[in-house]
Image 1 (cartoon, protein in one colour):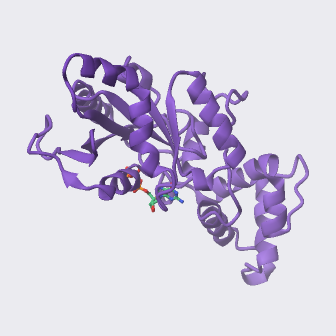
Image 2: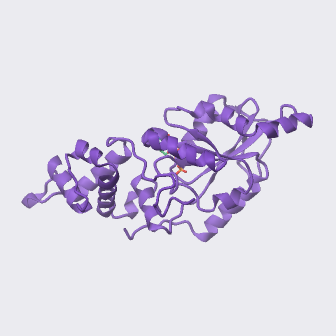
Image 3: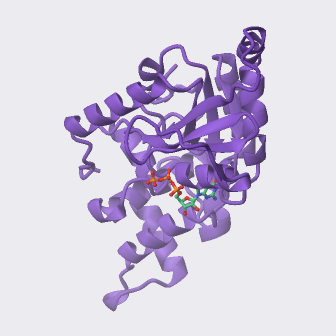
Length: 293
Ligand SMILES: Nc1nc2c(ncn2[C@@H]2O[C@H](COP(=O)(O)OP(=O)(O)OP(=O)(O)O)[C@@H](O)[C@H]2O)c(=O)[nH]1
């Protein structure tokens, strides 16, 4: 796949970085929304350095689309590294109502210290960050809608920013920090593309679908068997699988050739739409080059 020309110019990154750095001074905790299907590839490579020592919450969003056993494994992985963790399905709202409680537990020592200093009732301030397409807006909307009351007129640093009281004692900075994923790594780019985080128009859909076929054949062969009646061997190429699936679906063009482009679009749609099942493409502590840490 050689068409991953995603545009996050250095200038754009610098601006975002500066904005987040300045907002950080105003918050007590940073909540980082990630895609549970690709927990490493959907993280910003510079986030740890950016956030520094601020307490962190990892929101494993799209948990409904990911492998349940691996959701638990990733939860353990992040907890062991000092993060608080919340599993959510922001679309339906499952897990979202735990947000406030999890944050208050994470900051309980801090809150106790505020109380000792007489700062009773000081709200906890939270900034939500994430790379595009992890479901950040859906998450924030779900959280904010629950007990949506615009906080008192206390503007953020930049025009347009607002503090939103989402719960008693919890304020959210409602302009989320939009981070950049690690585009220069082809493997990361491919996973972001599988999940739909990178627009298909800028990619070779068939090449992407072939790569997805190979990934599924390796990790989740039963899904290919159930959905497309394929029995991949260890060395079956993605292209052969795509062609075989297209033939089984009856996607033929003149001369009996398989319309692989159509099958490629169907595979990507069905994968993203959850028709093939729930998948997690990265394993915590795995040997994959992208499982940093
Ligand atoms: N199944 C499922 N779908 C979700 C979840 N969260 C978000 N979505 C869907 O994913 C799509 C993208 O969600 P957004 O909230 O726009 O993602 P975002 O991270 O804000 O993306 P940008 O606006 O590009 O930054 C929407 O169609 C949501 O309904 C989830 O937890 N589960």
